[in-house]
Image 1 (tube, rainbow, N blue to C red):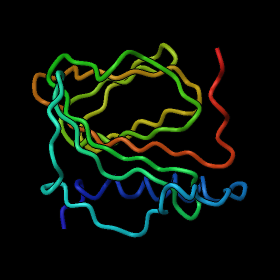
Image 2 (image 1 turned 90 degrees about the vertical axis):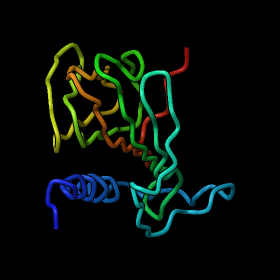
Image 3 (image 1 turned 120 degrees about the vertical axis):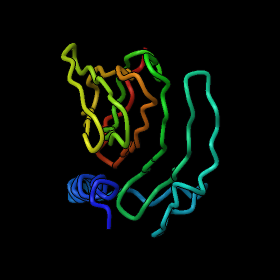
Amino acid sequence: MNTPKLAWLVPLFIVCAMLSSGAQSPAPSPAKTPLGSMVVDFAKLPVKPTAKGARRELFDGPTATMTNIEGHVTTLNPGEIPHEAHRHPDEEMVVVKEGLIEATINGQSQRGGPGSVFFFASNDLHGMKNVGTTLATYHVFRFITAITPKPATN
């Protein structure tokens, strides 16, 4: 068993356990069926080319303990950013699969390579950039629970 490839599972399970120990979640939206257990084979995911690299969808929907969990895999070309720095009320976790990513959180930058985990807390200003000379691929997980703050209104 290749430990680095499974390293992203541990932080994911820890975050899910922390989030599910909070307030009771409302019943899942009738429009979406709650996600069940699954195995996602990275090699079989459809690749959607983007102007800056590629994207693979993992899952997106409610669970028994979360209002919504969304996961995708992004591949960035060298020197690219996926989008401008931003903030949102839900929490987000990024696990680097390959390459070198620089994450900036509230003005502070830090780099991480394969196996590194970035956690973006609710409403923190954050952005990322591939600062390496090769493709950078990372897994993104966004968590929404019953206690996630509502988005700010302008």
